[in-house]
Length: 237
Image 1 (cartoon, rainbow, N blue to C red):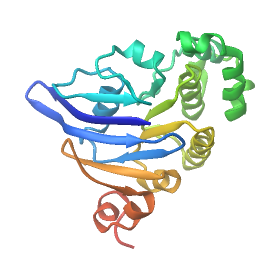
Image 2: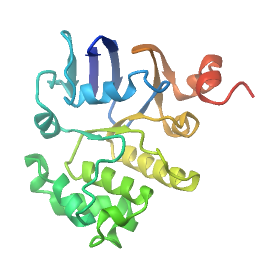
Image 3: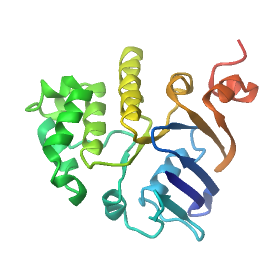
Image 4: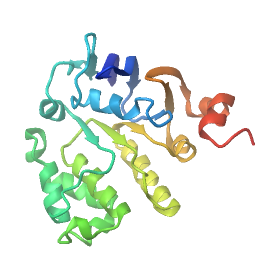
C-alpha cells in the first residue's frame, strides 16, 4: 500500500500543495481529478521525489519510509512515475527505451521476464522493437513510456495524464491496458483530465482544488456527485 500525507509544495510565493494526503492499495486504480493548475502533477512529482517538499512529508510504500529518499532510490524501492509528456528517449529505439527502464537493481535479474510482460501488454511494441521512438505516434510513445516504467519492476505505478493528446480510440485501448496492469496486483495512481473515461476504470478517486484535497470517494460516488459532474463530467445530464 502507498500511504502519503503532509505533502506541502511551494514554487516561490505560490503554494502548489497544502497538506495533501492519499492512499492507494495494491490491485487498485486511484484517479486524481482537478482543474489545470490545481496541483495534481506536483503531487505525483512530490511522491516520486522530483520536487522539494516542505516539512511533514510522509510517503510509505508497504510500510517502508520513502519520505527522505532521492528519486533514484524511490524507484529502487518499487515506485515508478510515467511523467506528463511521456519523457521517452526519442532518438533511441523501443528496445533501447525498455532497456533503460530496467536499470534499477531490482529489475536487472528479471529484465527478460519483464520485457515479455510489457510486450504481452502492448503487442504493438513487439512488432517495433527496432523503431526509433520519435517516429512513432503519440499513442505508441505512451505505450513505450508505460512499458519503460514497468521494466523497473514497480509495486506502485504513477501515471501523469496518460491519455493527453490521444484519439478517443487510443484512449480506450490505453485504459484497457491500464486495467490489465491492475489485474497483476499492482497499485496505480493516475492524474487524468479525461475524468469520464478514467472513472470508468478507477476504483476510487480524490479531488484536488487549489492545492488541497477537497473530496474523495469510490468511482461510483464521484460519478454521481453533482459538483464533480458539473466540474469534470460535462454537467448534470
